[in-house]
Image 1 (cartoon, helix red, strand yellow):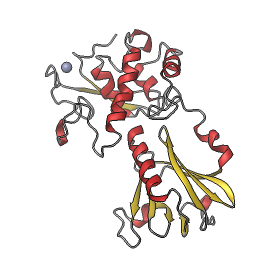
Image 2 (tube, rainbow, N blue to C red):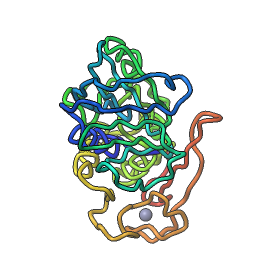
Image 3 (cartoon, protein in one colour):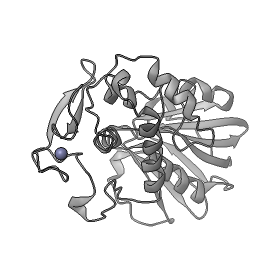
Length: 263
Ligand SMILES: [Zn+2]
């Protein structure tokens, strides 16, 4: 599942490719939009809200194309005629201007909304860690509203704050020495944790390959994420992994039992 910074990058590349462009053709390869044609419409901009992408298109009416990358999705930008890097049968949306083609592959959500209804799909989100309206106090208040909740789960809940996925959850808990299953109430440096989370996304939003250790080498980029059984970079204890979260929505959590004692 892409993290907020990956979605921010996708929004920026879509925005750079299409903002201000007139669409020469559109192709929605999802049943509910199969007959929709927005050609002749003008793309105003694309922005991210948490992990959601909103592409605003002016075509007779004011539309917003709402997409979400979910597990496997990605948006690619091509020159006209350039070969796609993913199979055509995975394409869900193709937006073409004269000079660019944006192709959304394996998108988890594709829906077209009247612009005034954007809030229906992103209104539930907490403050966006990479948004212009980031509000630390509100994010902290949201997290503290459920003091007994495991911190790992609380950080993943996009209604508290938007943009943290499994990877940053694991990395943040490690760098703060907090066990992901510890309740929010025992995390005594919650403001620092949230600030560091924002910093992690901020420094990585320009990078295709994120790092939290500062090391850009393939196997050295993360402290604990997907490093189960590998030695902790600080104390050599093997990194542990377990599934955490509500039944049916469990996510893998990685931690060092010695650097992150459970409280
Ligand atoms: Zn350790």
